[in-house]
Amino acid sequence: MLGLTFNVGRARGKYQVKAPAISGHELFERAYRIQLNTIESVLMFLPALWLYAIFIGDKGAGDSGLIWLIARVGYAIAYQMNPSKRGLGFLISILVIAGLWAGAAYGIFHQYMKA
Image (cartoon, rainbow, N blue to C red):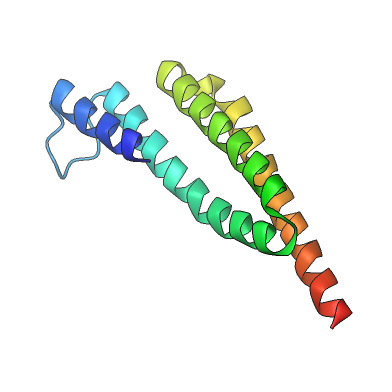
């Protein structure tokens, strides 16, 4: 996330997009959208990750976190180069999030059915 912030700042300077403007050069806009899309993804990812870790286990949560991170890096690189190629990184990251939420829901249900 911090790296994406620096990337947006670098793009602002390179393409002369003065704050608070959020439009200008296409490559700046890509960097900005990558950052915002990742923030949006993190808002779904982190709660799912934490709940999965609590109710299912840390190993699966850690593995899922690594896969999500690699997918988001791939998404960012693909989006910056050619926005139409970002689909695979997006798909993998969304599938990880869906899997974490499904696992967390199962774990929560299972935990409370035992009680």
